Image (cartoon, rainbow, N blue to C red; front, side, top):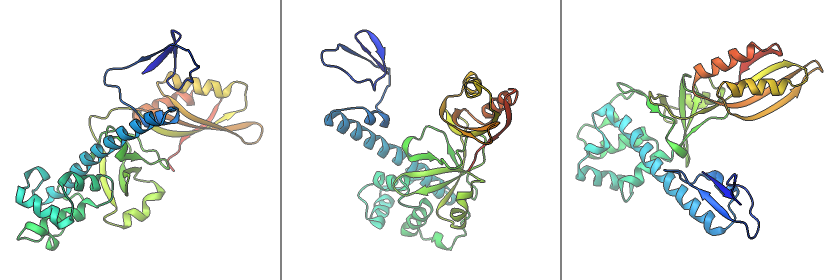
Amino acid sequence: MAARVERRLVPLRSKLLNGQTVEVITAPGGTPNAAWLNFVVTSKARANIRGYLKNLKRQEAIDLGGRLLDKELADYSKCVDTLSEEELQCVLAQFRIGDIDSLLEEIGLGNRMPRLVARRMLESFSDQTPGGVEHEQGKGVAPLAIRGTEGMVVNFAKCCRPIPGDDILATFNPGKGIVVHHQNCRNIGEFRRSGDSWLEVQWGGDLEGDFTTAIKVEVGNKRGVLATVAAAISEMGSNIENVNMEERDGLTSTLHFAMTVKDRKHLANIMRRLRALPQVLKISRQTG
C-alpha cells in the first residue's frame, strides 16, 4: 500500500500540508498493521487501528490455543472438536469461563498451560483420571508446527533469532503467546528445567515470509567497506533491518547486521558470498 500526493508516489508515513491532493493506493487483501500507529495523527484512526489489531490478536490466540490444546489431548485420543456439548459445559464450569473460545484465547496468550488444561479437562468428565497416567512431553504426538503465519501470538526471540532449519524450542510468555528460541539459546535453561513452561516445536513444511537473523562481520578498514558488504547482502535477496559498525584497532572493524532470510540455506549462501569479498576477514552468526 502507498499513496500519491500531487500525483507523486510517497510512503504512507509522509506528512501532509494543507491543500494537498491525496490518493491512497490500496492492495487486495491489505490490512492495517501496528507500524501505522507510529504516524497516524487522529485519535479516531488510532482507535480504529488498535481495535482491528486487538480483534486480530484474539482470533490468532484462539487458533493457536486450539492447536496447543489439541496437541495435549491427542495423548488421550481426544481433540476439542470431538468433545460433546455436555463435556464442553463441564469444562467451562471447571474453569469458570463463559465459552470455549475464551478458554482457547487464554491458552494461546500463554495465560494457561495447555498440558495442565488438558489434564483438568479429562479429570472433570472421564472415569479414567489422567492424573494417574504417565504423560511425557510430546509422547506419540509431533511437536507443534511453526508456520511463520501465526501473527502476534508467536514471536521469535531476539536473543538468538531462530530461522527455519534451526532446532527450536518455545516458551510461554503470559499475555503475549509463545516465544520461539534456538535450542542452544543460553536463555532457555531455566524454562527447560520446568516441565510446564516450555513446548516442543518444529518448523512446518509450508513456511511463509522472511525471518530475522544476525551476523557479525570483521573487515579491514578500507574506504567503502560497509557499502560493499551491504550491497553483497542485498544482492543475495536479503533486507538489512539494522547495522552497527564498531572500530576495533584502527586497522579492522566489526559490522553487526540484523537482516532477513528465508532459512538456514539462504543464510549460508549469503555468508559464503561475503567470505569471498577481499575486505572480509571473518564472519559468524550471532545466536545469543
